[in-house]
Image (cartoon, rainbow, N blue to C red; front, side, top):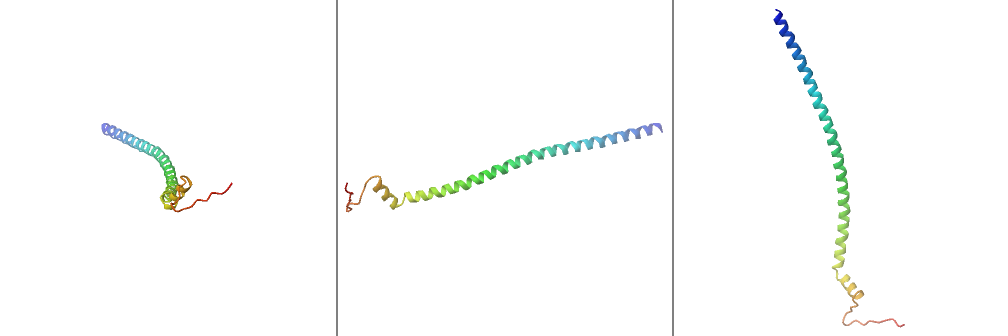
Length: 103
């Protein structure tokens, strides 16, 4: 009967240590998971800030693009070409008379 008690006692000690090791393992995993989430949360916030900056830059570039399209349309118009030909190149129509103010 002494041997049976000893086996039972050893079995109980091994069982208790198994529970302690299991709890320590679960606690370690929980701590690592918690620390990992902190890093992920920080990266998420950084990515949100980058996304906001990209959205702002995209909006600015859309406005700039529209302004450039309007300029392009104006530069391709006959009125603008005529204006530049008169002002910069001094060109006139063949039947046009130029009057210069007297000094």
